[in-house]
Structure formats: C-alpha cells, structure tokens
Length: 403
Image (cartoon, rainbow, N blue to C red; front, side, top):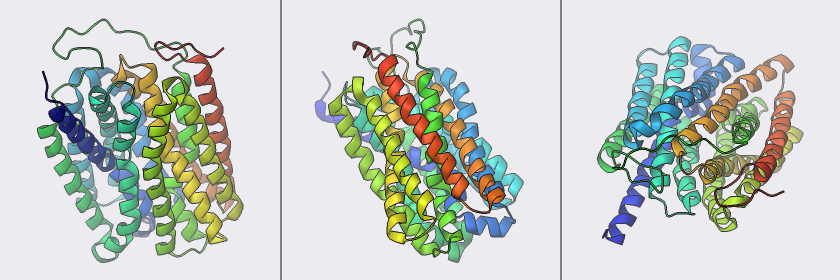
C-alpha cells in the first residue's frame, strides 16, 4: 500500500513542474507582448506585424493541438512536457542569435506548436494525480504559471531590457525552459493514464467524446478571441494613450497578479459547485472579462483608476476562465483527457491566433483602439452564451444534462 505522504509529495512535484512548464511554454508570446515597444523599435514593426508574431505562436498551438490530440496519450505527460520545453528554449535562443522579423515569426510558430504538447501533457499529468472530483484546483494552480510569467515580465521585463535589451530577457527565459525540462525528466512519471485505468494495463478501444462536445472548442475560441488582447495589447494600448511605460506595466501586472489569485479561489469554488455546474462558472468568468473590456473600451486610457478596474476585471476573467475551461473539459471527458484537452485547445488557440493580429490590424486601420475593444466585447458575449449551452447540452458522466 502506497504511503499517503509519498503520494502527496508526488502530486506536489507534478503540479510544480507543470506550473513552471505552463509559464515557460508561453514565454515567447509574452516576450513579444510585454516588450512590444522595444521589439517594434528594434525591428521596425507595425502594430499589425507585432500582433501577427503573437498570433503565430497561439495559432500554431491550435493547429499543433490537432496532432497533440493523437500523440499526447501514447507519448505520455513527461515526454510531451520535456519536448515542449526543449523546443521553447531553442526558439528563444534562435531569436537572440539572429534577431529579425522572419526569425521571430518562425520561432513563434515552432514554439507554439511545441506548446500544444506541453498544454496537453500538463493537463494529463495533473488529472492523473489529483483526487477524483478536485482536479479543478490543481489544474488552476498549474495554469497559474501563465499569469505568473506574465506578471514577472510586466514588472521586470522593461527594466531588464533597458540594460540588457529584449535579447537579455529572452536568454533568461531560455534558462527557465531548460531547467524546467530537466526537472520534468527527473520528477514526472513516464506515463500518465486517465483516471480509472492502470498505466500498465492494455489501452481500451477509443471511446467517443460526449455529444455536443464541439460546443467547447467554439466557446473557447470566442473566449480567447475576446480576452487574449488583455494580455498582449493592454500595455501597448495604454502607452499609445499617453500612459507611462512603467505605469502601464504596473496596471497589467496588477491584473495578472489578481488573476493568478482568482484562478485558485475560483477553482475551489467551482470544485464546491461541482462538475455539473462548472460550465456556468466559465460563463460567469466570460461575463467578468466582458465587463473589464467594456470599461477599457469606454475609458480609452483615462481616468487611470477606471483603467485599473477594467484591467483587473478583464484579466481576472481571462485567467480564471482559462483554467476553468480546462476543468470543464476534464469533467466531461475524464476517460480521454489528452484528446479532449487537445481538441478544445484547437479552438482556444485558433482564437488566440486571430485575436492579437486582428486587434492590431483594427487599431492600424481605425487609428485607435475603440474598434478593437468593441470586437473583443462581442466575442466574449458569444462565449458566455456558448458556455451556457454547454451546461445544458453536454453531459457530465453520471449526471443528468439539465432539460
């Protein structure tokens, strides 16, 4: 019989590695977003061009998720995570050694494809070690690696870039990815079976995903299309509105820090609410992000106190919503976590491909950010509606779909 303390220790190690992997995995996109002014000036990029770099990362994550849906479970969590971190480290290093728009674009695309494996692998590892019915908390903790990386770059990135350039920040992120790869190879199990199946036993015939499951990729697409610009464009939109770079970074960091805390708090609440109603929590978080976007749309950079409230609400909804979506997927397909997460991620990250590029293009065309924030608001309203439909139409195993 296993020692409960060793199981707790193993679970903590898995969550810690997965949290680091999530943060390091998104490093290229945050590097381009939070150090956008420095990269734009260095490479002479338009706002649409910078948005395209960020979009390439997320878009290739979405396309890569189609492949990850097939290979994640046979490969296992450890291989998926280690490969992702090695790929990210190589792409960041390539950006430093040969800085150009073409190289950064290729690096973004390849790193994004690798992140599809890391995203599926971390969810598989966490779902396999979390106690039944409480995966939401651990999924939220590991997903909190994303806002923790965002907060770190928003606060420290510009200061480091002033002395070492954006390339110096990229080198530091490369080291983080390499260390995470080493930790993953040492601490993660070789395979992570879905809950209820022995890793050593034969794999059963593939079981189909529940009826109506495709509503989840659609809801995720609209959610990230409407809320991702809060991460990639908030700082630049504020500096363009006349807000100082340090103040803009602090506003963004306040939002991501609040979001990181909210991810864990909301996860505990959604675990308490229970899997059958967790999709309603996701709908509420889409509505919270919508309120934040509406405030940013209405204020256009002033007064700063309302901008701060909008940023906190928007980023809180974005970050807590992202982790909740993963839990909703695990609730509805616990027998195929890797495949289900990867399919949902296809919609999620295709939305992230469209969002930063379209946001920047709309700003270039209109000469301001009003049209861009308005499009975000429409997408988030649609996402909230889709999650309400998921609640009604996509069954949780052992629970009756509301009728």
